[in-house]
Length: 357
Ligand code: SAH
Image 1 (tube, rainbow, N blue to C red):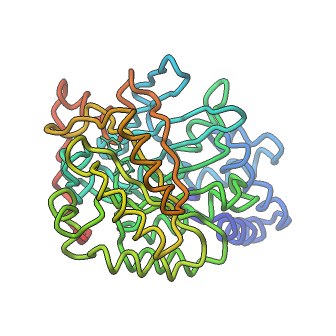
Image 2: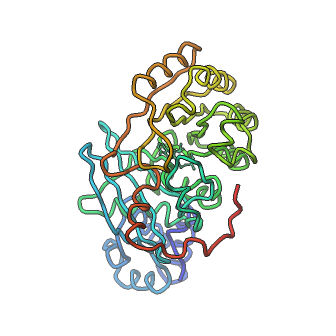
C-alpha cells in the first residue's frame, strides 16, 4: 500500500495518472485525485465523489491516506489555538495556529522531540525521538483543513518541535506540498524555515528556486555565550552560520530570545547588530516564553524596547515579536511536556538513526 501523502504533488500526479491508465481509466482521473490530497482535502477515497465509485475502490486497494490523531486542542484568549497530534507509533507532536488580521500562521513540527538541547527550550528538555515523515509534517496542515469548520493556513513557520534542517529529506518534499498550487498553494515568501544553523541544510534550502524564507536562531552574539545556551554551536559556530546567511540569496531573519541578565546587555545589542550587518539580516527579538526550560527569566518589555532601539541605532531593522498563546503554553514543546507529566512518554529514545548535528 503506497502512502500518497509522502509524495510531492507532481510525483503523486504522475503516479496516479499511471495508475489510472493501468486500471483502464483515462489519465485525467488520476490527476483528479490530487486536489483531494491537500488543497481540498478529504479523509478517504470514498469521499472523492467526483470520481467513479469503482475507481475509488481500486484506489483504496492500492493507496493509503494516513491520518494524524487529534488528541487535544486548546484555545487562547488571544485566538491562538494549539493542537496535540498522536502519531501511529504513539509519538506526540504539536501544532499552533496563530490568527493575526487576515493571516493564519501555522507553527508546525518537523521532529518528535529535538536533539539540540538549547538551554531555554522545552522541546530540547524532552529529548529526541525521531524525524517526522512528510505526511506527518504536511499532515498537520492537512488535519486542520479537515476540521469542521476548517482552519486554513496562509503562512507557515517551521518553529514547532524539532530542527527542520536535520530532517531535510522530508522537509524538502513538505516545502513542495506547501507551496505547489496543486498542494496547499501557500506562497514561498509565506513559508519560513527556522534553524539553529545547520549548514548543509541552509545550503540545500538556498538551492531551492522558490523564495522560501530562512530564520536563524542566533540567541547569543558571541561563541562563548552561544556555546552555553546552544550546544550545536560547537559544530556550527557563529562565524560559519553568518557566512552561510550572507551566501543565502534571500534576506534572512535572526531570532533572538531575550533572556534576562544573560544575553540582553547593551553590548550584546551592539555585537548582534554587527553580525546582522555582515549578512544583511533583519532582527526579531522574542520575549522568552515562560514555561520553557527552567533557570531563565524574561527580559522586561522596557529593556527589550531599549535593546531594539540600540540595534536600530546601528542601522539594522528590528522587530519585537508579539508573544502569543501564553495562557495555553503555546511555546515550543510546552504542550507535549505538559501532557507527559500526566502520561509517561511512548519510548522517545527508540530511534537514534538521525545524526545529532
Ligand atoms: N529548531 C529550530 C526551530 C524550532 S524552535 C530553531 O531552533 O530555530 C523555534 C524558535 O522558538 C527558535 O528560535 C527557538 O529558539 C525559539 N524558542 C524555543 N524556546 C523558546 C522559549 N521558551 N521562548 C521563546 N522562544 C523559544
